[in-house]
Image (tube, rainbow, N blue to C red):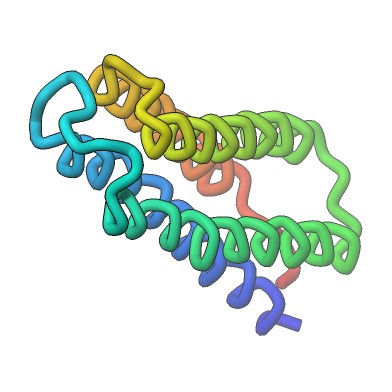
Length: 144
């Protein structure tokens, strides 16, 4: 079943890529300013971040989590490093939800410091993804 592991990795690449893309997209949409410059009722306002979040990032997240769960059930991995990894994945899910919240609040014009929040989320996402990658590479799956 190496295809299941490859499916998990492909979904992770899509999920993490879109999560890193979204804060930059929000900063670009804010016009480089720290406040929202376009009215919230504009027809084209922030439709791309919502589209990327709902149509790419969230399905990829669900796919990655389901495939990852199936991988460790299939191979019977229950080591301590896996529990630490799952805690970091939980943090990644929380950051995913915060990104969605920032998108929704930005669309309604209720965020004053879009740039600061987007940079903070991007920094936390990068650190979490780096920690997960390091943990997986430090203790790779055996017998695949």
